[in-house]
Amino acid sequence: MERPTLLISRTKVERNIGRMLKKTKQSNTIFRPHFKTHQSVEVGELFRKRGINKITVSSVSMAELFAGHSWDDITIAFPVNLREIDKINKLSEKISLNLLTDSAYSTNQLDQSLKTKTGLFIEIDNGYHRSGLLPEQIEEIDAIVSICEKSEFLEFKGFLTHAGNTYSAKGKAEIMTIMEDAKAKLIKLKQKYLKRFPEIIISYGDTPSCSLADSFNVFDEVRPGNFVYYDVMQYHIGSCSHHDIAVAVACPVVSVYPHRNELVIYGGAVHLSKEYIAVDNNFKFYGYVVELTKNGWTEPIQGAYVSSLSQEHGIVKMPEEFITRFKPGDILGILPIHSCLTADLMKDCSVII
Image (cartoon, rainbow, N blue to C red; front, side, top):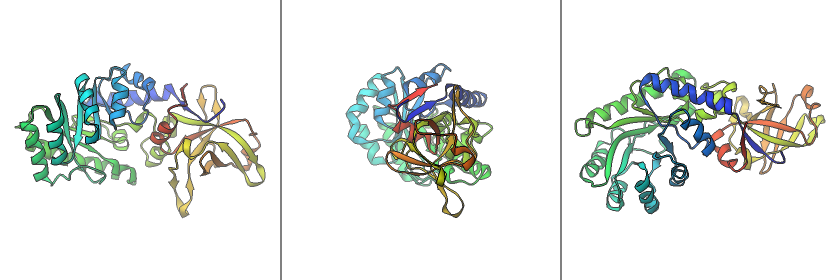
């Protein structure tokens, strides 16, 4: 191993998939996992092996990647980019494709440009305030629905939301309150249009709440993504244990400084991203440190953490009783703060173990 490499634990990935799949089956809910976290054809096959055949992605290019590997029921859960309409039309000719809108203008442009039957969800902003219409923006929602109703190629699929605001919640109670609030808003909207569109669904996506919820009985579809790998952020939120984190970045040690209890690793912002967790007194860290084993890695080393990152290098704080174990040329594992960004950065240098 010559350079930073993303290690993916097959055992943990399969366990994470199985746990979420079991919950969706018990709830009789459609499971449409978000593939933006792993972006891996190989990891995708671990889902397919469990009978999962509907997926979510976050871009047209990601949809093209997985459509090229026989995934034929894909939702692009990102407001439609009208400049990619030619690619969208090509995709829609080959697969069952669902798009996302939050404006009558974009919907009208789609209506004029699409050449094949294509599903369309209206994105609802349940408090995250990234994209989507607020539930009370009924006039705009009505306008979108009316366009779909008259369109030759747009098929109104229902309402979709991403509860990204759970990432800033403090504890399980607040996370579940966000989920319940989203549920109430989506149900109300579905009921308003159900007579006109009897087959519409409500689709909900978010890893913290989907991990902590006992069931999804009211949601027709769930789309968690990060759960496949989890990460240090999810561990601090409380949606997983550190045993569930299924990825670690293997980083060569390049320098050891016992006098300051620090190591320097080949592994920086271009490998781990600059995501961090801030704790008391503005203390920040950029990843937990683990020792690699034949079958994966150990529990995090108590008191060891990535304290800073430059482009290619990271500084690891290491307790005095551990630092003598390491020398230049050894390999350390770093559990990433945000596995989605790390997996994207490392997708050309990863291995399933």
